[in-house]
Amino acid sequence: MSQNAPSSDGAPQGINLASLSVPQLRALQTRLTSELEHLTTSHTKLRAAQAKFRDCVRSINDGVTGNEKKGTDGRDDILVPLTSSLYVKGRLMDREKVLVDVGTGFYIEKVCGGGATFSDVGGRNWSG
Image 1 (spheres, helix red, strand yellow):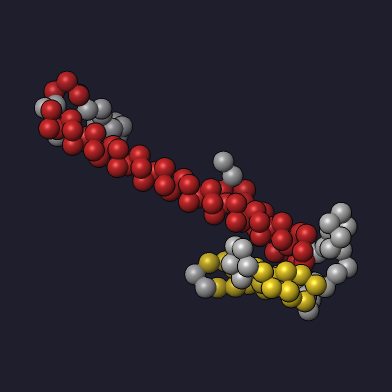
Image 2 (tube, one colour; image 1 turned 90 degrees about the horizontal axis):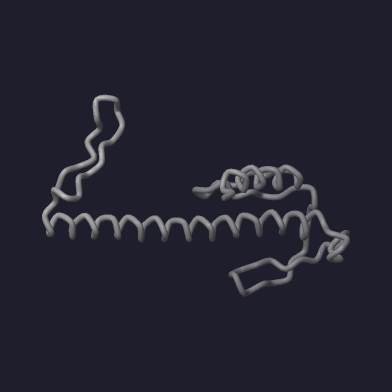
């Protein structure tokens, strides 16, 4: 099967499908189907991560800093998620600081507004 070899100007050239045999066409179809499935799975995982990221920002804005509309303004009692469907009661010790998970097991202590800002930056990078 011929590959997408770059031309002299650096742009990849197309494959002439008419010159491929039936087994080569089947192999190409299998490869493209596999790549499409991988891209679809990756997109789904990225969207799930983006939703979790937005939930974190919402949690900071509503739960930690407080939200008058939701009745959380000035309250120290919160629900802490242990899993996606299991919560335990907790009490905020400090509304001014939050720990932000920056990945690979590292956490950064930020002032509450800074934690939301860090999350907003990542959310903008993932928007789509």
